[in-house]
Image 1 (cartoon, rainbow, N blue to C red):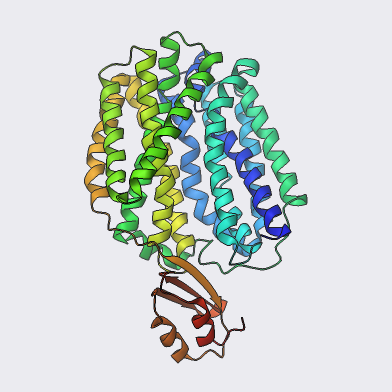
Image 2: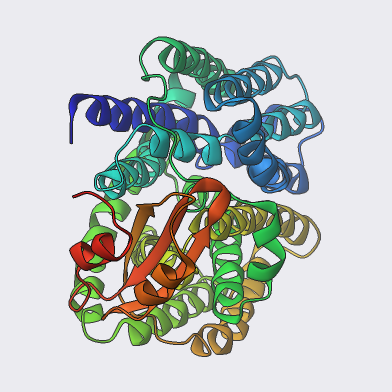
Length: 446
């Protein structure tokens, strides 16, 4: 990667980490720390934890499309400003209701699509996967960092301290966008970075993509559902808030070891490991419903949950990318992200509501049943071939016969031509496909 691409990837990844910290840091602490509010209830806790997911799901695709019309940086800066305002609303809140409103506002700063599109604009086609990978890794890193920092911050500065900190971080991110992130030098073709309206209806009905969208909805429903309960369990087991980070450290270390084992097994049997992971989640919740009165027992169950969760969370996006038609990855990922965030919203609402009226054990009964229903959905997923994506620039003089010759080249599996962008998207088996042959057919200079 050149200096611009390095600066782009790390500055945008840093912005992602700071922003996602603000969304995630309250997850391990809110259920306990909000108990002093006069209108405290398990339902409002669930709504506050998952509430950001509803506005994220609703605005993820529109904000991405808007960035194509008015520019990436204005949309990203505006989204961060909305996020900062939501953080301040929650920081000054004296009731749970205002925390919920603040969380909904935080979620309204839905800038993921615009960030990915800007990353595409600032990188060459050959280096774009590396830039996207760095940003993608930062998202997972921010979640784990939030689990460790949340209890420490709330112990020293209270719940409002978390929201003040995240609001301040969002303002820092605006400065990074304006003065550190490079301005776009080349505009990437939109198909593999941005959602496109005319693609959405087609992709919603594609069977394999629909199964993955439902799967990520359920996955994030389950993790949000879990985090409405876990902090309370730790308190009940005589683990005060100031040492919760130790519990999460144990869980994260153990789950990484488990993840490595699953990844090794998945090299030859990916679908089997996906099914094992979903079945593992069902088992965890069934065991939690039957009792969790020992700290060691609870940590083992949560570690096993995160092992399965981490594997699915890491592999689902790659599967979506592989299945999405050539030139429609941006739209497919936009829909996927919307399902993901909506799952977080549903999980918070369900966990809070059921816990409020039936008790926490019934939350885990529901979660286990959901996983059992999920198994045949994921079982129907067709095997996904490992194909590589290529983007080739063309011109208005390219004859139609060249497109036919291109589709007949060895290894080509899917081709999408977008004349108004003067670009061709390919999916091909890299073992048999020769990019030099494709360029010769299109008369593109090497």
